[in-house]
Image (cartoon, rainbow, N blue to C red; front, top):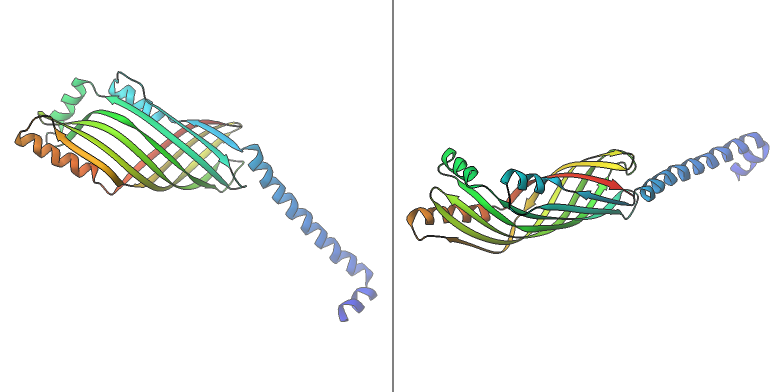
Length: 230
């Protein structure tokens, strides 16, 4: 009753208050519209992952390696993604020998063949501009490897579920993007085997070292992506 009397007696004040309310609504709608526009304009990203290819080149592999990823915004700040890498790295005999000579008590991977698939969700602070992001997901890997330990070789096979959390920064240059991130990856083994090529004391020692590597509970991963946004 008091508010009605006040507004009735002071029409100028009432108009001013109503103007502020209307302006606030317009500003809120404009802000929301910008975020929605950002999500629509960047609703799909595709990326190549050059690190597997770089590893292949360094290892002088006889077959190629490739990494690809796709990402789609499901809300203004959240995006679902899926990535995958196929790795076929076969180090040259010279590189393996040099590494073995330099690190006599270490195991040296001479062959790696496998794949890694990892879906998840990312949160972006700025969907339209260069932005920090956080991510989480669950991946799966299956791979075959051969390690050299001194003068012996050990063959390994691993299948593992890999929950992961991480983050990084995405640079956006008009429609092109560069992503650099890092993550902590859990290692939940589904199956594993380590088999020495020869039954010697040295090979069995190498087998134990490979087993310890396969059982590592948490690993660190680096992500580099070059992409285009639609």
